[in-house]
Length: 338
Image (cartoon, rainbow, N blue to C red):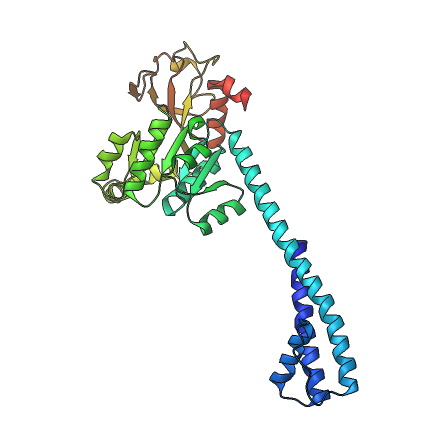
């Protein structure tokens, strides 16, 4: 920022002027170093209590020069400070207005409450998927880091209804409660469910006892890192091949294979056709491992003659490119809107 550079220059000039005056008075008046510094300071600041008893004509000329230089340097420094403060306020206000404007345009986005170890991982996954999201974070350091990365961040308490509304909760598609406190996650879930009855809420539970409470509060899914971690460790121990496959399919950074849900929307050429006649496996290289009907019924390993209906949701496995191609065919209306 130009104003910051100007302020640094002014401070350097003042420092040089104080050093120049101190050394000059030492040579002219032969006072102690501190007395020379003190006399320079009161001269530059134009306070000027009194002059030393051994003041010579040459010293007065030198003092006059220090006064002139000091007034100019102080004026320059003061203008730099004012400019820096004003510019910082304007930029901050503009940045906030722009952020609220950007958030106000979002529909069907995701909200992540808490950007700690769990929340930051969720944020990376959402960002990687290309979906819009808003982060609510109370820690200033974490919030600033996300802002520098280009994320939309609201600094505040996610348990506050005003903050949740500012994040566009009523227009959001999903919410992740990932703060470190179970009571906070519970309160966020209760508030969010009251504001948006159709919201998909995923909540974190640190204590196993909090799992049922979060579900009763309105969370669609509850994830306990302790339970999930222990189950995964047991699977790695007892069924290592299965664990390797799940890691390959779900860790998006590896991108060799991914599991994705694909919604069948209006106008899809798959509607009314048997699964075997769609070419999903043979032409697109995607395997449908489950189909979730609109009524919630889940068909695992669907038979080849299963008829596809509108609003079905495929649980599909394939490469990233193959799944993206399938999504475009399955929901052409949503793809055209994007």
